[in-house]
Image (cartoon, rainbow, N blue to C red):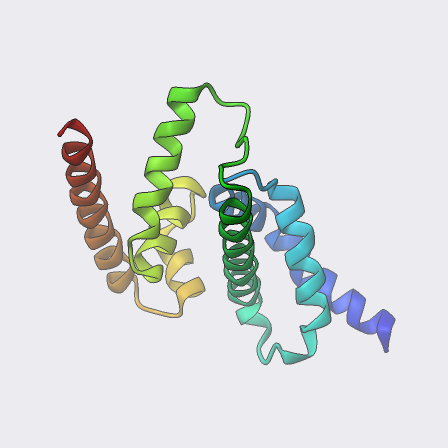
Length: 167
């Protein structure tokens, strides 16, 4: 049974590997490595593989687990910062670029999850609108609307935050 489970899991995962890797690369920040994220998600997905009801939902299944892992990581980082009284070193980017990235991710975190996912999948991961519609189990027009609203909200948030910084 275990060999059959492993073969079925790999059969579903292998065609999605590149897309899933791009998704994970677009979602990580704050010191987390995307390869670690992929490994964590795949381990959890394999353990919960019996819960998958439809093979077509496999990519969405992986994305859902990814969001949960990232949420747990984010919560853990908040706790660590509170306990240590400071931020951890983040990455190899120069300070200005890192500040800009942190600001962007902060603004993205203010968006509703569906809009945030649409923007990350489309703009950073390179998924098509049709692919995003399949992942989010919605119509293509809903994806377009989420992208439009998400971009508008992100622009407004970034402009508002920028104006506050200058005061």
